[in-house]
Image 1 (cartoon, rainbow, N blue to C red):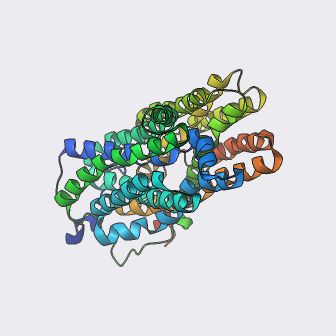
Image 2 (cartoon, rainbow, N blue to C red):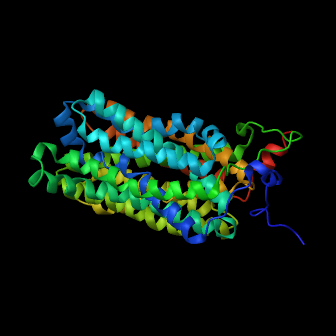
Image 3 (spheres, rainbow, N blue to C red):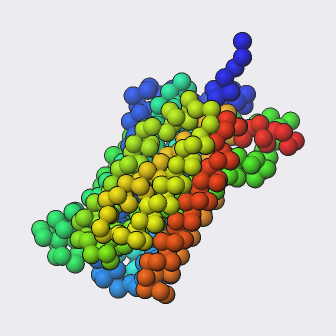
Length: 423
């Protein structure tokens, strides 16, 4: 009888330090859903109210570009230390503590009197989200067992649900607050602060989870098989490129797509709504793609499709942004299926929880640093040219690179095998 390589366990997981308390399926589902929902709104809420925020804090296009680049930059830089933090405190407790930082940052930044206070508080919240980004896939691999695919499906789906909710509700909440509890100039502050209150719920739940699991970081390999650099694995490297290209597109969309629509003549609420269409389609991608990955021998047709949709969506935004805005939003949303695919491939292309944690700590930090270039470059190019033309041409080209990287990770190849072969 052969062992399914997708479920083969890491021998080191039997080490006493790695042994964790058990949690029920219901608690695991609630923990995954709530943390996933909380890891994106703090970033996606900025785009639809960027004009109001800029006017209130007195920032120009270049500074706005830096602000929209912060999610990718912080997700990358902090992601490098997430695995080390998880190794010291355990996966569950580290995620819980990261949510403390998220809550503090999101609740305090709406009170910022200037951009010099707003940016550090935003960075604080994003740093907490970065830790969750890296450790939750490893947590699912560690505790999911036979439900790993189901939990990854929920995680991928609710990451997008949270991002969609943040972008879709930003402008309506700002308008409602501006006409009731605050003046029109400060409605954006209440819109941003709402998500700090929402993050309190997962914080409480993850404190309960941490108490139940104890120190649950996966055990380290035996000395005969020391950790090898993941850059020696082609699958890990190209998965990082795929993740980076799609994340770059996503954060450009979160940060700048509403402004592109507004510059084309659309109302702020409609512009935010079209971004919500992009994000909402990602919910379908999060629901579908983990199962597709689990059952497909090759993802090549999907990867080609993701790239083609992305190229077509940005090309449409160049040619007729207002006339067919919904169509371009749908195409970009379908191309965005690459994001839940890349997330789900982290546990799917690794066998042991230990390698999953390392792979997540490699793919996401480097990928997010790639992603940070996009929003920053968009702000600088747009400020220099006063036009979206060059920006949209470059974004269309990024769809080609995304498809090429995706083709390399389409087959059933495991990072564990590639790094072992390079002993």
